[in-house]
Length: 117
Image (cartoon, rainbow, N blue to C red; front, top):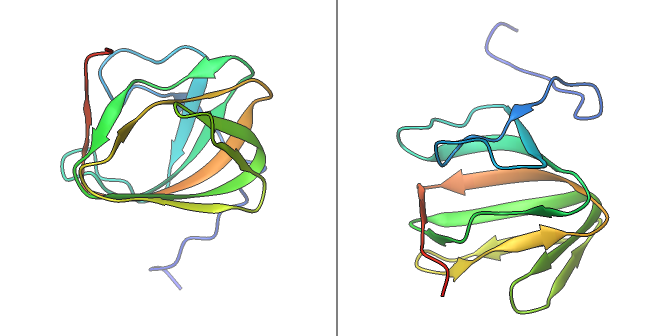
C-alpha cells in the first residue's frame, strides 16, 4: 500500500532535535508524521545519557511510550520501559535521562518553551 508506512524504530536515521530552534544537546529525533506547524503527529525521540529536555508547556495532549531506558521528570517521577505516559494540555515540565532513552511520542498540539524558574 502506498498510504502505509512501516518503521523499524531500531533501524532509523536520527537528526538533531531542533523543535525549539537550536538543537538540544544529546537529543535527536526521527519524524514519522509530526507536523512542525500544527504540532500534531508522531516521532521517535532518542535521548543520550545526560540529556535534558527544554522546559515546556503542553498546548495539547502529549503522550509517549517508553521503548528503552528511563526518563526522570522534574518532580522526580521515573518513567520506565513499557510505560505509556499522557500529559494533559496546560501541563508544564521538563525531563532528563541518566541512562538514555528511546521514546515514541504522539503529540496533539505544539509545546511552548517556558523560562526556567
